[in-house]
Length: 272
Ligand SMILES: Cc1cc2nc3c(=O)[nH]c(=O)nc-3n(C[C@H](O)[C@H](O)[C@H](O)COP(=O)(O)OP(=O)(O)OC[C@H]3O[C@@H](n4cnc5c(N)ncnc54)[C@H](O)[C@@H]3O)c2cc1C
Image (cartoon, rainbow, N blue to C red):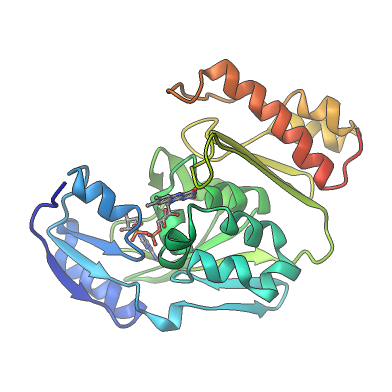
């Protein structure tokens, strides 16, 4: 459980982080909260020669109103997302999901940018971003670009980020007063989701039902055609490809997807 040797450099700004990624190339990996990367390094699933520490870039730690959006800086910790008064009022689904990540220690170290970049299909923030139709702002040598949630996640632990880019911000449309639901099923407190369902504004996304957050498109179409929660949720597992592990087989996960989607829709105010 000891990492391979690595060098450690600290970036003080997003520009400096991009420059360091350019300088070290494939050998470098960004380090934010370290709560996904360091466990992987300890079992040698990752062995970067250089860690570029961005966790202390204060200019990327914020939650603020920006026009029709709420903007969340990439190094904002899960605990700050969960307790942000702005998010709890404007995008409560994201704040709620962040409050369910791991335990307090994880939430006080882990960052929103790290969680999205890590792209674990069982994680809470990627599925919340997918349901919210949020956008990820990334910065590279050529400047900034914005990537929608549907394009950002590309498979198991894989995103649209280029190797010389970092996430600098997450943008979410303001939704004060809009109904939403988030249902996470775990065997033990603090675990990753066996399955989770997130919904807001007619979008429904599922965690751990495929290699990335999966939109329950049949459910969304049924809702758009006027179906109630029960009938729409019955379609939630259509088109999904859940894996199998010691927590449950694929059919069990499909069952969970239907049940959790119905509960999430009920929380969002969609009648049966
Ligand atoms: C015990 C435990 C329980 C957990 N439980 C849950 C859970 O229930 N739900 C859940 O969703 N997660 C859970 N997590 C994961 C947690 O949310 C991590 O904090 C998160 O996945 C990674 O964020 P980080 O800031 O720690 O990233 P790091 O570990 O520092 O980095 C993760 C990856 O993202 C890259 N990266 C980091 N920041 C950026 C950036 N700004 N731009 C581009 N790339 C970047 C890194 O290079 C690395 O590849 C748990 C972790 C632990 C240790």
